Amino acid sequence: MEGKRGEEMGKTLMTETWLRNHRLLYVGATRHPFIRSIRDGNIDLSSFKTWLGQDYVFVRSFVPFVASVLSKACKGSDNSSNDVEVILGGMAALNDEIAWFKKEASKWGVQLSDIVPQKANQNYCRFLESLMSPEVEYTVAITAFWAIEAVYQESFAHCLEDGTKTPPELQETCQRWGNEGFGQYCNALRKIADRQLEKASDDVITKAEVTFLRVLEHEVDFWNISHGGTSTL
Ligand SMILES: Cc1ncc(CO)c(N)n1
Image (cartoon, rainbow, N blue to C red; front, side, top):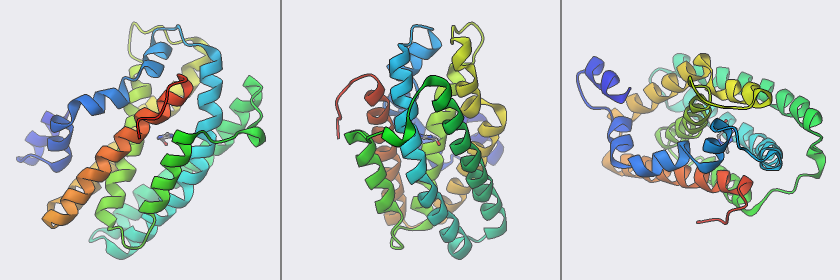
């Protein structure tokens, strides 16, 4: 996938280089045991419910972060009308997502008002807050946004591939992030990030790469919650 993009552009994109250089961590975030257990059909439903409740809390904190990225796009982008439309589309999807979490929680008997965010979730939300600071460059923020969405897209798309044993009652969840449209949206975010990175200073590129790695670590930690694992951060 990265190779094809590179050929089209005639040069190596920054995200492509990072995905190559940090392959193990990326695979750790997108092929986590939690995702493997959905794909293999041996997921423990209490793990799924834990994930559902925790992710609802995460998504609520994700909304102001996305709003901050949108605001930075308005000010700091050379192609702000395109970027704003892509990011606004993401916000609209989050609106749907929150309604979906409520519906899904009631289906599974998960009481959303009772959810206590776990340590890894709190850390991830605090990290998002730090990225909302006006001092954080648009390039860094959009890179984080892309990485956060891409991990879910790739993880859940993996559960929908032919020959997987994803339980029917979890198909809808996997579709939510694994569908083609969400994949195209992630590609649009990636394109924005690469365009920004292309004209960024070395200092900003380094910051964006560190942020990308932190996102991957937080995602691994987040999946670990539902597996009863402990934080590595
Ligand atoms: C932890 C986490 N990462 C990414 C997404 C994608 O929106 C999500 N819903 N939750």
